[in-house]
Length: 76
Length: 190
Image (cartoon, rainbow over all chains, first blue to last red; front, side):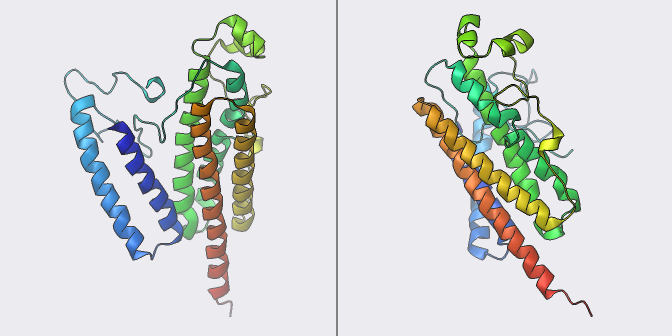
């Protein structure tokens, strides 16, 4: 599931950089918004199973506060 | 709040075996002149005085470079975590071990600490963007030389991903130059 998120988020990064220099490409913007929606939905599922992906109010927490739980990215 | 942390790597990092020698080479891309730290700090800092049309690009590439910095850190961590002091010594990392144990440090492959003099901010958009293009090409070449020295297929998979990213960044910076030239040509001076 993490690899699927990584794949989708990579598409978003690539489209984002492309759009930075091609801001009028309508099709690319559609793809960007499409993949952004896919990523958001998948992350909600992932976080229910494995805990928060982001800090500072971008993800919800269980009790006790599970942002601090392992594994960190270099421990996977 | 400016940047948020996401608990994931941009691309998976696997290593086949403990290999401190490869870790020593990889430190070049951690704290070396053309490494990921230099790249992230360079673009993040140049942004403030560049024309509005390219600020988004610099912000985004700087942010991506931070994710690459964490991928390099992960490679170095995984390649050294099970190494004995004897293995570190055999890999030429005894000097590192006496000062840092297995902690990471912002330095190049020869142990020279990171310095801000690796990066420039000239206040001239074309000069800054040309430096950025050159930086990406130098980083791409460094990744290639490391891949040439590495016999770890899992590590090479991640290194090839990073090498390709340098090519895309270089292309985007070249486009940014063209955007600024176009803008300059449409300006009326009288």
